Length: 629
Image (cartoon, rainbow, N blue to C red; front, side, top):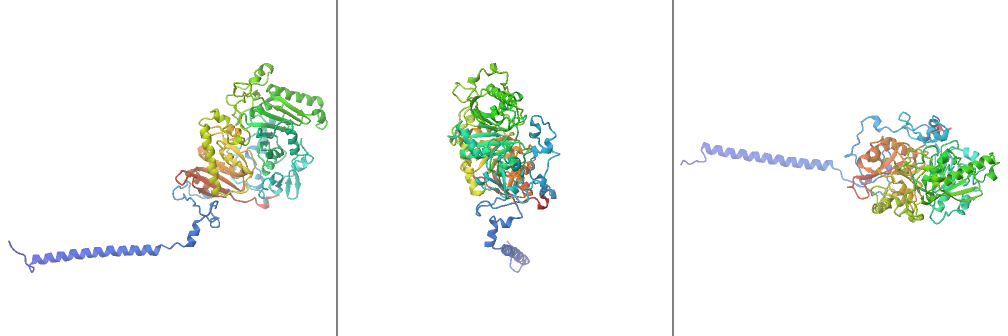
């Protein structure tokens, strides 16, 4: 075999190939090292150290966020959830998408959309139809922010607010002049004073209630919920509060301007309403006591229509109290400028209707007359034989009360096995009543709700209130609304605080729980949130909405619901909204256009729950003083 020598051409070629491969490896290795060093150097020079000043910006500093919609509610150590990078709002990049809503003119300061007086004049005056709810159509709706009066102040704290209100908040002296003798309201400098008087109790509601207490048992917790028809400025309800009796006071928006607004400014439960042709928006068997003090309702007329409606909403064994014409007509007929014969006929009609409803007259003393509804209808089996009216109602749902016509018939009570039983079930005395399982739940009349789920709901709201208190230190709260109240758990969790809650059950929800809420000793109303609520602007300190927008997002524009929330919320009032992240990001964007400052918090169970909590504050602003007349 031939042998290769170093000096041969073939050997020289092999040596050159080895040198080239070595050079190639060295060059590639050098480039790798160079790029690594360059990358490390760039990373070092572009990253700045984080100092104390940078950390301080992470905490929710209110001063640093005046341009945005975030306000520091909890402790500074709590993290703010930032969904901007992952949950973008589907809005067009137009100026309209981020433009703030304009302020309405000052003449809208007391705008009540569904009780607007100019709109009401289009309807019949018979049976007060023109004072019932008539909401604006799409072509009449406004999309501007209702302004507070130029000198608006935060209301007096409770219980001082019961007796005082700022004149600048409700600048109307009409009642102080028209009702001067009756002691409804007085003007003292820059504020109103409420002496507690009324048309039939000029010496004060307290003395009047004492007279009632001599005739029926107001103490002991048997009577908890009441309704006052034609309430004036709600002094009767205001003075019942210290006896642990919670009153739904209502009056129409009429020539006596701002009666209900005065009541709510005082921190007393009230709502705009009238007994016309529609049922009152409350379930059957709701109230322990009903009251009329010269409320000008024709109780004996229209085949007993109005007393039949009172009977529908009264609990079995409940009381109806009447003072004013025609009661005690022998004494007052001259002052009422009516004949004795006319007044006697009117009282006889009331007596006949009351007997036909199987009511028992408990007492008539001076200006007071009191009837009691029976505990059940076993003892009234012969009503139809004795009286032509009222007939027994054939409706299969006595709780149906949203735009439902009144009927001059007797609402049948649930059947009982013996005469001593309370139809529908008895309730506990107050305050045990608030946490006892409601009779409607015990009887299984609310689909999907039983005693076990009721107990779970109680614990849930105790936990949630604790979370709200830690995350959102809310101050100066008196008037509270739960916009989707379910079983009233939020109201029950607030029972030891000096607040009252308007529990709203949407007519669009899958369960009607309002009857159970009343059985717990709380008050509330039905409502379709695609329409405005029956109250004046700036009448609630705190609004709570638990999954409300998920119910309505496919029914109507949630922008209109939020504008309505802004209308009824006081300046610097708070809204707590629970819902999914996608819904809350939309709500937050709209809230920013309404001058709300807001913050999205984790669910109380932690960050992995898809439900979150948005806490918003309506910022303080008022109408332009130049518009003030």
